[in-house]
Image (cartoon, rainbow, N blue to C red; front, top):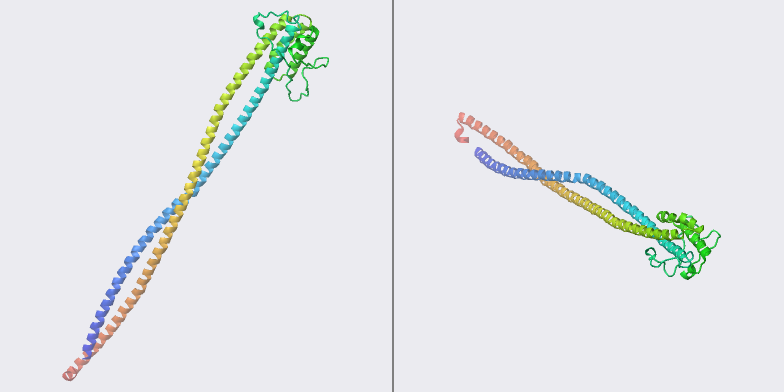
Length: 363
């Protein structure tokens, strides 16, 4: 009976051990499957993390290159703005010189007209010597003349107009005053106007034309050259008007050329500013990409940590239960060996009893 009980117990323990070990194997397979799945997911997350990090790490260098480009464009814009300012300053200076020259031309023309009036009146028997039908004199002086004040130049402290050699001032308010002069007064006034014109004019072209009157003025003082001075005055007046027209045409051409040049320079500056803004936008977009990659890398790092946590948890389950199941199987095998030993001893005892003829009583 004892052997029977031991065999029954062994069969029950063996069945229970098989069931426990089968359950352990199922859990182990599930644990290993979960571990493999999360390990693969963690590996993919690590690859994505490295990919985002590599994309992110090159952006600062690209931004630095764009910043250099932005700096270079800024320098170009500054240089272009400085050039256009200097060119504008040069144009303004040229414009001022033109206006100054125009004033000199107008003053010289007024003085030439006054000289013509004096020639036609004071030196020609008060208009008797001039033929009103002569083509040379169709451009007659105006009815009223006032000699303009001289143009001031740097370093010139003269504030009066037309000082004569004797120190008198030329004060002419009307044509009537001119026609009332005698020859001596007319000569003195002409000399004063001519001297003042040469001394106060700042325009070299005016001076070049006016200087042609020099020898005629000398001859005029000696009592000759009235017709010559008359003819020269008309020529000088015509030459001054021609030079004035040419100067005005040149100024208009310079204004038109500067308008085109300034428009071209300003368009170039605007193009550089557009390029600067576009480059700055590229820089901003790169920093936005940097932030996106940085955030994506952080998300993958979070996934790696989460996957690692699950993997570690199931690995712990696997390691712990592997030990538990192994210990249980080990205990079963030890107890089973003990039970088999007991059965062996019982069998030996039964055989011994049977040998002595006691098998029926104890068997």
